[in-house]
Structure formats: structure tokens, C-alpha cells
Length: 399
Image 1 (tube, helix red, strand yellow):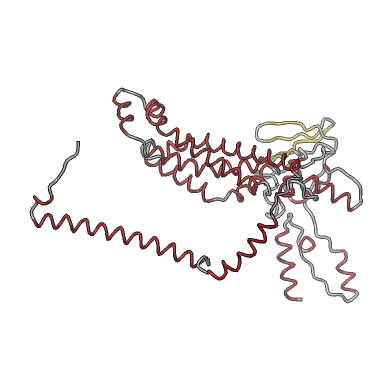
Image 2 (cartoon, one colour):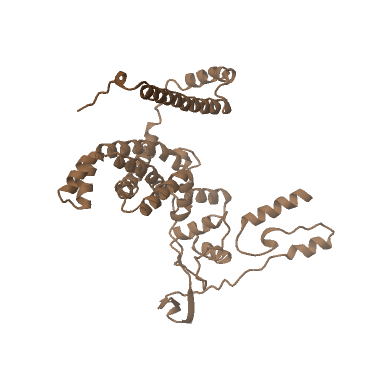
């Protein structure tokens, strides 16, 4: 039922006030549009979008590139199948992770379904944080955690997508029609029944739209993700012990290294990456330390992840907070926390530190040659390429 008012029947002063209010509202909206237009215009000028000369000069190059791309070459379609399957699988798995977690997070991130304002605020901050970290950065983090392959890409896509999908889900929940919700509550439905029977049916179409859109986005993003793995001396020794000794030939050693890290030097695979070929470890290794911190926590930031990935791929067992009890014919007896165990080892290697090797220094100085010592020859601390690079740059600047 609608109500109509006869403006002419109102007093002149009240009628003038109403008309003035309409006029101010119109000017306010016009001002808002002008501000938005001004910001857009400023941004276009800043990035050079208004430079017609540059744009026109680039048209011939675009035409040339388009001409070279036609007709498309499908002769290598067989080599596309595996990368296509990888991309499809990564996008589906990443989207599935996002949708499953978002179905839970969205209901606590929506104002009308959050159990408490504090929970709502924490959920929104969490979603903002997830959206603020690019997938590529998350991919690098997960590569260091789980190694190379499709898994770190899937985890990065899924975790980043949770921030965006949950936001869209929560906004859909906030805009539901309250009539079915109030009717369900009036009928004595529990909060869970209200969500399942009054809220969820209204937002299911929007949820499906967002999920399909995000899967399409992740399918494109997965092509980018596909291009993105204890103390220092202990890691070096452990890596040496588990590494398979192959041909001393430099070419063969390089090919073996490329295969181990999944690098396709023929560039036949997407991004030049392929499935890593990890050799079976030469022996079972336990890497132990007394400190309670994570094994390898003090490794250099630039290279530490490489050593951890190599040892993880070689099934090296890493234990921290270890107490060494005794060595007998049964093996090495240790205690971790309250539990004692015996490691059935036949050799025990003690890596108790390292010293810099400076044997050449005296001879060179005796021959009158200037000597500059940097990196591990200067201080034999835990592996730290960053320190060696800095010292090398500083030395290059003064000699």
C-alpha cells in the first residue's frame, strides 16, 4: 500500500524546505560523481593513458605481433596435455580448498550471522590479511615448506582465495531477506536451522557464481604459480652423506642437478619446470641437535631453504631438543622430551663446529700479494651467503 502526498497542499515554507532538500541532494550527488571522475582522470594521466602519441605509435607494433601470431601453430599440441592437466587440477583443488573454508568463515564474517562483534572483527581482519598477500609470495613460502611441485601452488591459490571468496560469501549473507529468517525464528528454529533453512537457500546461487568465477581466476593464476623449495655444517655433512655419487663429469653433474630440481633445460614443459626426479637416499640419516629450536633455524635466509628441501627429499629425520645418553652395539641412545629411543645407527658423526680455512693467506702475503678474506674464510659461522655477498660488494667498492 503506497501513500501519496499533495505537495501543493503543504504550507509554502515547508514546501520550499522540501524542494531545497531535493536540490541539495542532487548537488551532493553531482559533487561525488565529479570527485570520482577527477580521481580516475588523475590516475589515467599518472600512468600515461592520456598520452595519445605513445598509444598511436604502439599500434603498428601491436599489428605486427598479431600478424606473426596468425595462423596459430597447433603442431605441438601433444606437449600441452600434461601442463593443461596440471593447470586444471591445481585450479580445481585450490578452489575447493577456498570454498570449503569460506563456507565456515563467511558466516562468522557477516554482521547478521556472526555470534559476537569481536568474532566478526577478527574474521574480517583475517580475510583482509589473506587478500593482502599475493599468491606468488604465498607460493614462495609454501615451496620452502613442502618443496617444489603442484602442492605449494595449490596451497597458495587456496589460501589466498579464502580471503576473497569468504568476503563475497559474507556480503551475500548480509543482504539476505530477513523475512524468512524472522519466520524461522518465530517458529522456534535453532540458530543452525535458521542458517540452513532460511539463510543458505537464499545465498546458494550467489555462492555458486562466486565459486565458478574464482575457479576461472585460479585457472589463469595457476599458470603463474607453476613457474614458481640444524646448523650449517651439519646440514652440509648430511647432504653429502645422502647424495648419490654420480659421474664426475661436469655436464652429467649439471644434468642430474637440473632433473633433481625439476628444471627442463629443453623448455618443453610449462614454465621450464617438470616433475623432479629425486634419487633414493644412499643411507638413512638422523640429524640431531641439543637446541629446542627448529633444526636449521639458524641457516642463512638466502640458502637455508635449499638445504632443508634437499634433506627433506632425502627422507632425513630431523630432531631437536635431543639429549645424548650413550652409544653401544645397539646404536645411539637419545631422549627427546620424556621419551627415550635407540637409533639403530652404525656410524655417528659429530659436527661440533667449524673453523675458517686460511692456509693460503700466509703464503700469498709472504709473496707480497695483497690478501682480502671474506665469507666463510673470514668467519666460519653457519651458512650465510647474504653475509658473503655483502662483504664481497664492500670489498669491490674499495679496491
